[in-house]
Image 1 (tube, one colour):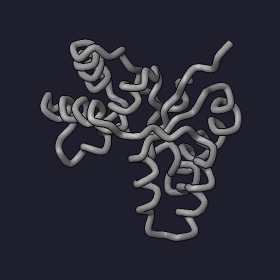
Image 2 (cartoon, rainbow, N blue to C red):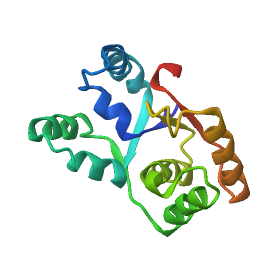
Image 3 (cartoon, rainbow, N blue to C red):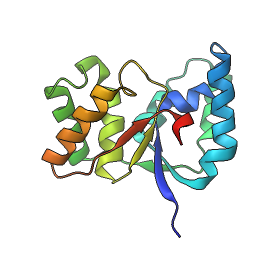
Length: 151
């Protein structure tokens, strides 16, 4: 049986080494070791770019190593258009365009789960409902935006 697909946004990857919220770091490491192997894991070019912009060189190297082997989704015109639709519908602001791209990349590629620790913009009931509505209207499947501990 094929593994289910799972998209990780940058917040999950960075939480692996982020000691500011110890419980979240602990849950992320547990997720990485016990849950993640059950899934086919994806990130996007946006994730790679966000990690490449990490200022602390040693941390950047650790994060890059952590995503080694993940499938990287390339952005295309359809993904950009879907992300723009999320912004036009005010699901995400222009300043949150990267979040819109994460969701659009996962949606375009039919990935049902998007894991995130971003409670401000992504892991919210309103966001889930509005994204799913736009996706259906644009011919894409619904997506579950969840925190890693929900898997």
